[in-house]
Image (cartoon, rainbow, N blue to C red; front, side, top):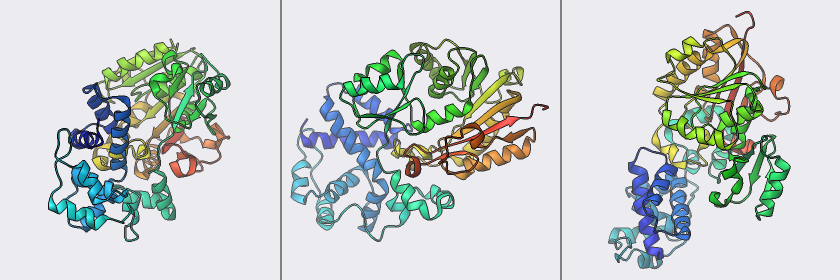
Length: 430
């Protein structure tokens, strides 16, 4: 593809990302699958430019508003090129109206490019929330959460997300996997907090990593690995992953149990559970059962109340902790008006499954107090038969949590996704 054709392809893809109510990575994947003629190098350039536009969404919008322009995909792309140092003449060559190229520049667009010449993406007059790409709905709760650290935390959310792997202890050791990765020419190190984790410093083609095909390793952020660790599942126990999704934490929990005992992966999406079953088989795990639910109040829950040693509730949430890898999620709205009551309902229903003396873990990939500490406080107030087990009693090695009792991870402090987890136990006499 020519450089101009790449720009037009990026505009086409950007339009799809903004018009389809699906995460950007899913839209990008489907878009490229439908255009198999696009080579790997061109795919890389297009994806890199797309995600640059997504990560600079608010700042580009600020510049365009400053000069009275509407923030469309085309205007944001033009502003990005100018703020990255291309001259109006260089951009004019690319926006030439030729075959596969973007339409020629209008007089108004050329005037904008002249105005932006010599400027950079940031400006001293930008508010902290614009500089940190924080959507309006999240400014107040995140400022309450982080206080003076708000700018630093938001800046960390703009850095590229790391690639973390979790070694499957049933098939490999971390030491052997590190040797294998380094033998492939990849700089890899053991994760600082997760005992089975590996961080790969580069972004290799995942299709070229053989351990992902053999089930020796799974892609899983270090923070997510720690959440699964807190479940503390032991061989022979009965465990429920209540919102299993694609099954990442289910895999980690079942491996903790050395394939002994019984893990039930529940979700309202039968399709996701069906796809996760192949991952379970590939990992060599045979102690997992999938259980589609109609809702969090499915009759199956009532029939099995008090029957499980451990229950994990990885609740649906705003996803604010994953903005590094899903920058488009910031601008899709919080959905808190429906998420908060749903989280409370899921937690209350799943708690019925915990047997006396059993453990309940509530987790989100959010950094908003309303979805985390406030949900736990409301649950405990309504369910006096449960109490918090402080993090230090479960995982004394995790001394750097941002909360004394709960697991609280942020990109700035821990270089993980933003995660929250509270460990609760049902009273033995309950």
